[in-house]
Length: 246
Length: 260
Image (cartoon, rainbow over all chains, first blue to last red; front, side, top):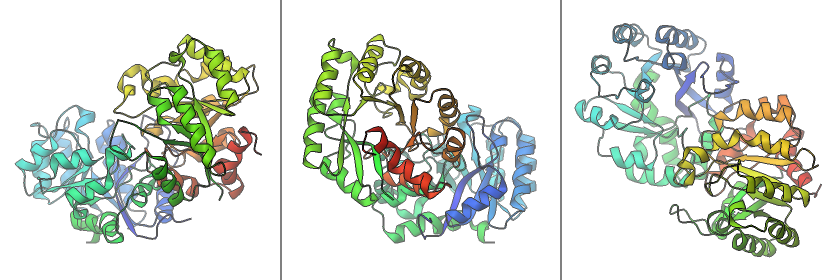
């Protein structure tokens, strides 16, 4: 059964195992099967291994995975404790058209806010290469958005509270993947769309940690127009990550 | 697909501006095509279990074809557990829900052990709902769903002498933490049943089925607190046979309450 007929771009999908749990469907074959099940036109992968320690191997694994299907796109991961290596990867993969941005950077995991000096050369290089950054949201996201107004930032795990914090920073878009909260009264999708505008909300599942059905179900439960859903599921991703179509 | 949702709530609450009236809840169930639901009064969770049980009976009496009453019992709210369970039996409830995280008590409490033994001894089915609203009492570590989950094996052992199933539900977002523990519990305790509604990791429900079979898995949505179609779309799209899906969607829970 196909849960919606709208085509989608998932901007938040991890590649590889994650230490906190069993993830049964991590192979490229499984990811492609799941893309077909949920009507994905593109799926943007970022490395789980990179977050948890080995960034060189992680980014390389993503680059290999992208070769399996042109509908797979990638994000380069940046490790702020290995700045030189991350810069090398940024240049290397930033020149690969299959990579469309940076992320999902995890200031929370490294316990280092995105506005720390260690991130600075990495952010500036991403800006040079015109690569948007998908970031796990924290209190430093707004500071970075204000410091680099031409940088495109996408906050992962956004909800109505995040929108209210950052809606005035127009270079921030909001990805709704809400791993940490599934509560209607926390997320408030309709209000997110009303306050930020549908043009700034992006669909992402946090797969394979999360089932795309779970995330799609939120949009299909909320009272949103088909036009708004088209923006959220697809068009905003193309606008934010233009390399997808290049 | 006939669906009986075993996690639905109604009534007044003060933890947010969500409309939790029975009318709103029924309209959400209608939109999702949910045929029947086990419902619990939020008054029972948040204020008085006795008042809540009265509300639940009243609401279900008006819609017997649609709503199945789920009692609550807060073990910290009475010293007469036997009398409390007798009242629940007299009101014709079949299942009794415990909400330790919401009510900020631990599954390690001795008064809970006595309560759950009374429930099983009376032939009622205990349902443990772990986790809770992040804005609520469960923000204290001891009442966190993951911590409560560590006590489920003790409850299963405690009730081993009874023929009663014990249903385990989850009411937090981070359901990806559940898979390994559900599999381990399910393999060692045949009296445990699990709700798949918050098993959010893709492939995890299929894995649980592979490991313990489809006969001990039920469906719950946590309506109206969570988006109904999140769990519903998972139920509809998991890679299993239609026979397995029917059991999970309604067959298993109807068997538990003696309707099948």
